[in-house]
Every structure is written in structure tokens, then in C-alpha cells.
Length: 183
Image (cartoon, rainbow, N blue to C red; front, side, top):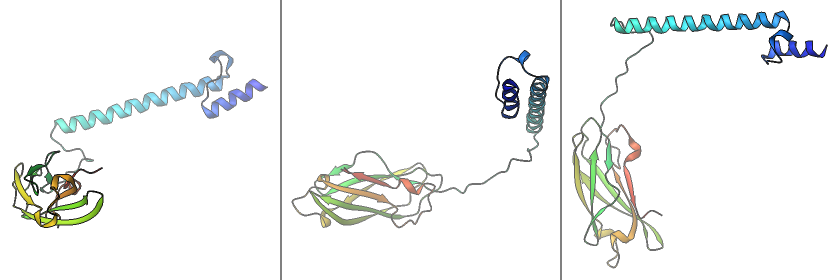
């Protein structure tokens, strides 16, 4: 009686209990039906793959494939991991267009966020000219007007952001800034 309950439970829940010769005929029959059904599914799937493969080789587009055109867009990034300092108050910033369309002329912004232990928000701007795809430009940013005489730019924490006013609809808007001394 206990064994029959376990076998019935296994038939409904697909749990394999004991060898086949101890199981009732219904279990063996259901197992065979499952194997046959799985075989049919494999054959049907293989036929669908073969049909799709033939339509591709016959230059007929499969019905489930659609074409999406993506508009060309610039992608301005601040290049490199190190800034190139010029004197105590200036820095060369390299801006690259990694997109597949030219960029429009736009604004580069340098924001000093920390001088020593003091949090600040001093901003200076420079112009980024139009940049062709795969090309880069070097922009000299002068921070003299936003720094005390005794402070060197390389000793501050600052960020540089390309296209701060979002004049360019870029393919990736998340890669426009770089930080110096961010801790």
C-alpha cells in the first residue's frame, strides 16, 4: 500500500522511485509517452531550424527578422587616465569623438571640487570645436581665475566634463567626464 502511494506520487510529480520492474505498467507507459513526446519536439524544432536556414540561403528574409536603423551620432569622451598639466594653473585635456558622426561645437567645463580639505565648486569653461568621427583635439584649460595664487591645479580635486550643455545628442552620454584626485 505504501509503495503504491509513492509510485502514484512519482507519476504526478516526475520523481523516479525504484527500478522499473517494481513500478506499475502505467508508470512505464507514461515514461514511454514522455520519451516519444520529447522526440517529436526535437524533430519539429529541427524542421523549423532547417526551414529558417533554407530561407536565409535562398535570400528570403525570415518573417521574424526586422531591420532597425540606428542614426549616426557623435560620442565625445575625455581621453586618457592622466591629465597633462602645463605650469601650475593649466591643463591639457584631450577630447575624442568615438562616434560615427561629427560633433557640433560645444562647451568643456572644469569644476574644482576640493582645495586642500575645503569643498568648493569653482568652474571655468573652454570651447570644444567640432570634431570629426575617430578624431581628437587638445584643449588647454586655464584655471588661473578660479584658484588662489598659492594653489596648484594638480593639487586639487576636479572634474572635466565634455559637452556640459548637451548640444550633441551622443550615442553614449555616460562617458563625458573624468576626475582628477577623486578619493
